[in-house]
Length: 231
Length: 254
Image (tube, rainbow over all chains, first blue to last red; front, top):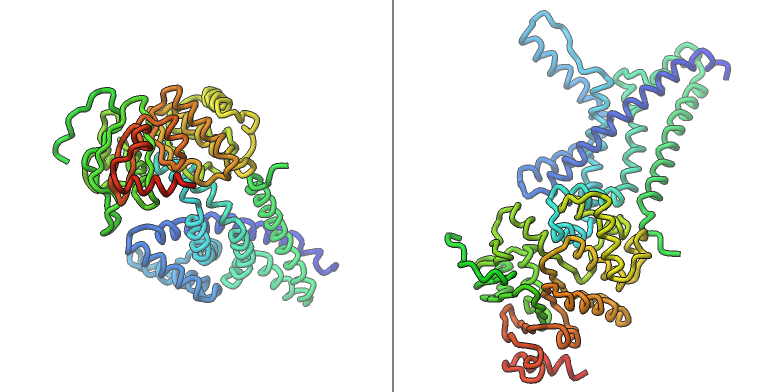
């Protein structure tokens, strides 16, 4: 274990990056998921098709491919655009952090689209009718009735999506994001101790995923307290 | 919709004129004409699929009528969302399956629409909620969740929730049909109390005892039409229409 000693701070900052990617991609994932679900549930044919295409494309391709395509694709596109304005420019890219975060937000968002869609459909029509009959506006009904019932239905799958997000962060090391797996590779290069170094990475991810799992369990307990029968 | 129908007398709260309603090719309501005056209690009965629920759901626009006019307290129901919400504020509704918000306590169920729609203060909404919970005789359940209550209690809460909005009219859509027999009376008692206090009520129900003792008029519907409309005494003892006679013989012989 003493081989790790000089690397603790690198691992720490790597973990911070994992956390940052997680938080940003989580926000994007919820955003894409809600937009996707709204599009699928809308009456607009074009929006439905677009959302269907989105889920087919991102659920049907390897995650690592999406990350690579988004990173290099955005680099080529941005460079081309930049060269229009300034021919001197050699290379412009979206940082590995943002292209990676965007990629996994899009990927897991495509799964979340289906989760949210199902959950919205699971909201009891009676609750919505009751809200309407009380004179609540569509927006009020959405915020106070649909969303509170929907998130409880979505939560178990949503917990899985969060685990996917945190684990997918490791994939972003392939485009040079200096998260923990990236740190490990560097450490192995110097110390020649792959097992030790990868175990540390494993522990970091296990730590994060445990916190997520416990949070989801607590949320489920909180969210379902109205289902506990009277004692 | 060029001409708004002529104003009815100020006493008239609900006015339906030549209302038709189609679901696709199926005509659910055929030329419905109905007037309900302030303080009147109307019981609507008829075989299942006869359009009773559809009719009262048109009154607060949970269903959209295809043509004809529906005028609630002088305001015609049109497509304007603002008008619809304004009318819904004045028209309470109690559903067959209670439809309480499952994730909220009883008290919050009662307070939500008051706060959002009536814009009352929190304290006032709570006071009103407790007042009506006492009226339906279950103030001790205020902090429980709907699932923890019996069906009869849930339906009483649903009635209290409608009352909290201080509506002009309450519509009941088969309020006792989903209840176990021993719970029907507690709900009917609350409804009878309401009737005595002068609330304007339109009830779709098969509780003929309730109809007899409470209703000012009983309306019998079949196949989307109002077939017969009479005071309860006449309706039960001397039904005019053959279909009414058949229906009554079917439900009253047991």
